[in-house]
Amino acid sequence: ADGFLQALYPVVGEVLSRFQDKEEPICRLFDLLGKLFINLKDSVAPQVESLLQAATDHYRAHHFPGTLAVCAAAAEAYGKAPALAGYFAQLWRFLAAETLPLLPAPGGASAALVAAYFDTAYRFLLFVPGAIIPDSAQLESICEAALATASTSQDKEAARSATVFLNQLFARCDGLLAPFKPQIDALVTSPFGERATLRLVQALTESAHPHLRPNLATCLYALVHNFCENGREDLCYQWVERALAGEALAAKGVYADAAGHRRLTDCFLGLARISRPRFKAMLMDLAKICAREATADALVGYFI
Image: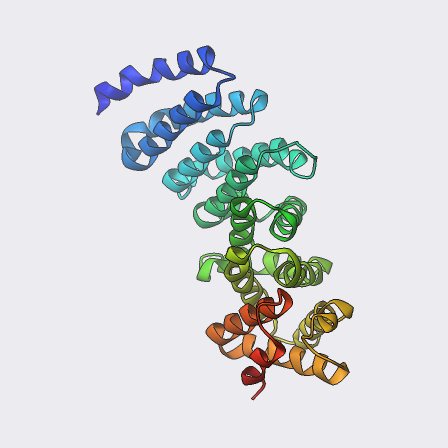
């Protein structure tokens, strides 16, 4: 392996120089490097920073999804090394600064780049959360971009990757992010939490592709289940009540009056507290009603 790696390293710079604006060979190169990071971790470790420097230099000029993928692989392979904590924080700041401005701009980022960005953010959450969470302003910017993508993108993969990122943040990666609970709670209990509830409900009931409904339902469960506690019950109730209000759901036959709206809100919060499977099933049926694939009778069983 060492001989192969010594022969490979000079080739990396040559490929980047010769094919710098050709996405396919560049992404294949970065895919290979990512596999080497994961599978030959110790052998590649001495060169990881120089290889990533070559990748990020290329990313400044050409925003190819493969560059993000190799950074994600590096985070998975080396993110838990204390000596590299500062390096990965710097790497994430660079990726965010280069990519976030492209996301809201029409034609600014391909769907593949958007999907790769949020997949990379997810991997950083899992393997090097200290690089992404402590900067509260940056974290909020990333989450706002993820929310916009999850709720409005017409590309299934981009919307899915953004939703998965938000879900894992809200669920605190099933306990892996427990040390960062104060920062995550501060974000979600800010006005962002209400916006997230509203836009995820709107996506589920108005615009999302049917294949994305399970992801959106899971994300809403993580949001409400994890934050409707410890004195925040009234706040969560307000979020859900407002998200389920308005003429849109009434016009689609979900409920007929204020009592129906209140019953749906109570059911939403009650199931979020006690049963993930039933909560998700209820939201899937709610989405079907809004898409005219079922009638309001589909919700009756959840109210009992």
